[in-house]
Image 1 (cartoon, rainbow, N blue to C red):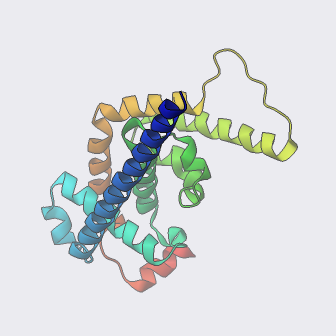
Image 2: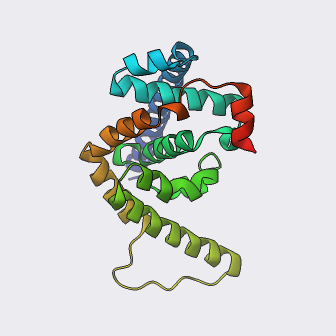
Length: 208
């Protein structure tokens, strides 16, 4: 019996180590890809913007924002409204992780917390009312969590109350339809001036 338990423990440890190694490799590839895109589109003028296909354009915009955040953690106030919207949606997608993650992580991760107030406006701007509604409910639930933590009083749950797991599943199901990617590309093209290169004075105006 002891031998069986020891074997099971060993298998569990090995599987955990392999899983961690795979995650690190995936993270490394992801960072390398983002670095590649951010260098390739370090300058995004109107001509280049217009020539890119939808998928490449989205990658270029996201990578440019990602690079600025890597260089300056406090860059959020310097982003245009359009960039905040795209970056918020990008962080939500990363949080969901293809259905494996929970939306709750968006509310506790220090990199995404500054954009909580942009969750609903972001999906409203993309004309995704279904997701905007999910975000409104998720924000309300998060506020209950905060209140519970501050007061020490347990929340009252009623049968049928939705959890972050429910919101995550709903969100993933909507994302699976593929409409969000199209709406994102459409939004970026409509708001071109929010994403192409601008001068230092323009950035200063945005932050003031």
